[in-house]
Image (cartoon, rainbow, N blue to C red; front, top):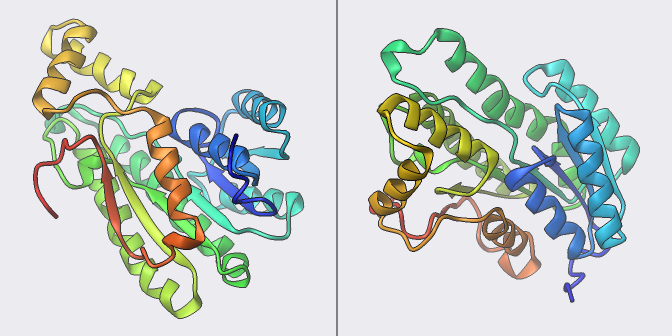
Length: 263
């Protein structure tokens, strides 16, 4: 049985319709929180919120918006405030950047990558900041592992995630002033639809099967297995617990030991 440690709490999760974001939203609801999901696809959001509410008995609201735009972020904020005037937790998990060989990538892929994962997260942090200050809340931003391990075939994702990590570290300084806890995570290879897309695109570029690319990735990373969205959700939930409050301004890898450096 779940702990219900977050009973009475309200959590906002961007990218909550699938993958890591959905797993985080479900974990918070299992632990007693009411959750509000943000993403762009209304159909997937409705299905995700309905499933979470049915399986946990908690309130699960949602709003579909294009978080690439300031207007979309404002609309998402307004909808979340209608759901609940209180906000205890903000998780920014939205954003999928495109892989590809840098010399061949069009400029719009870099621009689009920053629009959602970086600018969307920055805007939501700013919009929800007063509510988080009032509740001594928590922000966790999901910044992919490529922020620390640049790859010539994933320059967009590496640059966007590195920028998000840098922003989050700076935001943690403001969090010390206002008593909002701020951290970020670096998931490694995690089984999501986005990872499938990356593997399929790499298989096409390299003339291999998707299964061969996955096996090679696990071997190259030197890990026991691929990560699961629930692995990330468990760490996010821990970092939002009262006993984890002293963990602040930290970027934590959750990659099965894939990152070999220590920074």
